[in-house]
Length: 86
Image (cartoon, rainbow, N blue to C red; front, side):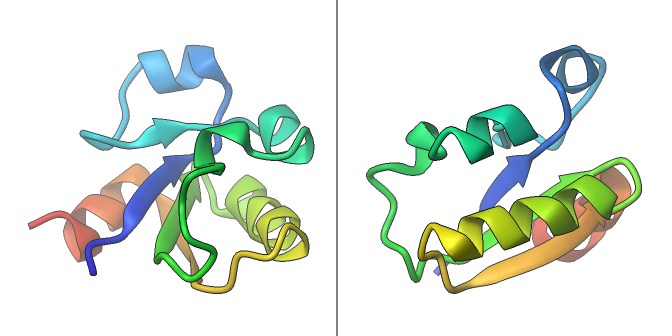
């Protein structure tokens, strides 16, 4: 199953460049229930990234608390593109 890529940076950061097809869900939206992921099965692979991996790590904790189980910290745009975009 192809992972869903989630950019957890703020919208202005996302607009400056992001992984093609990535959903932009900043931390405040994650904490509000991650509504953009409402129709996504809880075991769908999700790869989160930010600039350094710190916010994506926090995002993983929030999503885990929401019941998501297949979570990966992709660290940053460059690493996600190298490992997950084919």
